[in-house]
Image (cartoon, rainbow, N blue to C red; front, top):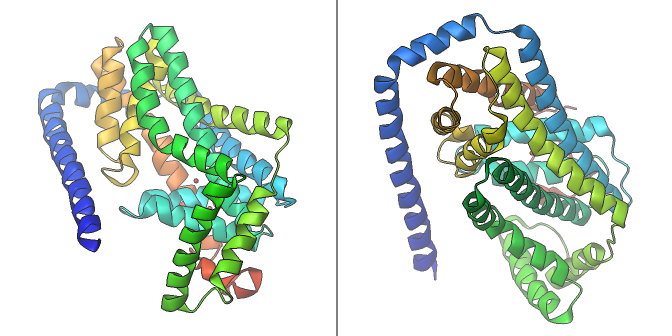
Length: 355
């Protein structure tokens, strides 16, 4: 069994390594072939309009704020009344963990967010449910935004490709959450969860108690959560705002370097960068997003030097600035605490943190 898992990991690593090598070759060719345009783009950066850069920063802040408000709303379904400041700090710091840690970043960021939400007063089961539902809404909203871009540009094939790629992970999770109220799937999940908890107890000694009772209690709490219709609609709209505000950041970046925004193809070009970033080939999609997004913008008719300069502004704001804020927030919160087995607020380490 372990050999099968190891083989699967090796195949996935080989697939990513192949893609990364292809991207590196393409980037080297792009730098050599487009060196004159790159030099021109650096000149455009030197004369960028700071008002539009400020608008890009605000758009990115709206994007991060929408995600934080969505998760706070979902956490409220379980009766938690978490402060917006605490959830927003968790969003920024979690993003820093997700981007900064190679390979394990997204998983570590999720664990960190769960622990932080517990520290802020949420039940562990509610925190896990809220993060899972937030991810489902985010995936469906991304497909909706890409579909809007496809309608504007007249490309129906893109919608199908995006739906297959993005919903490949979201649909099974949504089905799992919806099936918890049915006896068959729930019993299967209880068995799997009991084995998992028992294995963790053998290694760490935590959490204390009977594994079967722990899992049954957590599932009971999750199935008792019944979000009302307004909460679901607000969560869906905030998920869409999260993506649309990030795309607006790209539009403002184009305006900052004096370009004309290709409105018909903007969302599709933006989605190309988002898709490449989701592959996790490099931390934060560094290098690969710049190459993919620049090429996509050039395909919309944007001048090469303007496209490259726009992408650099967009990435400085959406990646580096957000990463800097998240890193400082993480330091202020005392660093990442990922040990969920420790329980609740009483187990927090002093001194008196996160996607």
